[in-house]
Length: 230
Length: 85
Image (cartoon, rainbow over the protein chains, first blue to last red):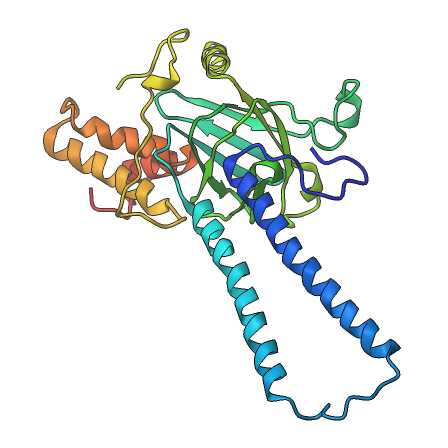
């Protein structure tokens, strides 16, 4: 999860998020090079006491400063498009879960061969234990197996919400009547937090999302426990 | 394809609804709807015990939110369901 005064992105917990961080670094490199070049040029021009005689006319320089930015834009656009299509790719899912946004909580369904349904409400301040994250902990977490391709179907029951987990590189609007598909794959065990990202009413800030990625055997045990409870 | 008993659940044995080339979009609502229609059409023609129909049930159970399929069940019972089953 994010920490106070954090400047960079959160550590990646999925292959797609890793790619997003690489892309971010790539674009930052291009940006910093351009910014340095521009500032250097400005500094040199301002501090120089000479006046350039041919300031109003220069075909060569105009061609160069049109072609080079065009090449730079292509260098940024190609990996961006690659990433765009990668996030859309659903690789033969092993599990399907459904996430339904309500005012103001999320409910989840695991209904591949069994019926596990639960609501996930934010824990109020009084119920937090030491070390818990304020406004982020929930009573029922979404438990998922690691290294497993999961299809998440996101929808809403009332108004538009948005299901988001930054460290997995996921964000999908939950729209009533639509069933939006997300590909989720946790590459390591951990607890990943997110919050509703579409203004959905008074308690919009108080409907967090918590994913607990566990080894497959633990996930199977959790499913059995949930089936037992029903 | 029946529900597992508690204590027997295995991820490797679960096969969820596969990718369907008829529904390549982000919005999968149509996949859910088609699975629901196919199952009920199949059982209406072949009867409840016809095993291949269970595939469609498996698809719509995996793809449809419970509230959607429950609502359609009620509509079928009251004769107001919009689909041709």
